[in-house]
Length: 265
Image (cartoon, rainbow, N blue to C red):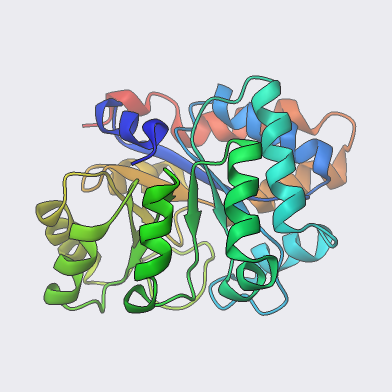
């Protein structure tokens, strides 16, 4: 497993795992946002890549992808290198889809991860059963391949996926696409309980989490919380209102979501 992901096991819980779109509001501000998130306690950064047919992305993330038009996997990983040069230390995983990955090519992808110090890969539209060779290659390259499970995943399949998982296990709170929600699927707690019993790596929950109350509640039953749409929406609102001074209020917003997270029981 990648060394940065291995360190997550010893960190205070719940882990804070933000998702942002590479290139939104701009490539330069993506770097600034990543550093800001680390300063406000992010433990892992999910870096999304714009794609024209994103099966898992809700409206907020789709709009972010439109604003980031022209961003590619290659350009996004070059941003990671710039983030590292400016002090980003947390694991960074690339969140993309199978077609852009295939279009870039496996050899090119792994060459870029080495050149730009990328730690992980998540492909939500690649079924686990079809990912074996890629997971093996990720292990050989010391890249963590992040697997997803949902409330509809059978216990037998969940066990199999959890046993083979790397980095952290991504549990989806609700069926459908990403986006802020008030309630989660009724089987979510069962999913998290079983997932945690099947693996020693952190079990994180994503899709729909947008408030501090949800962060605290979810953090009681899993090891990490993934927040995407609400952060992207807030950054867009602040940047639209005040493009020269959006970071200060953004920092306050992120802090309001996750501060004192180490004290969550």
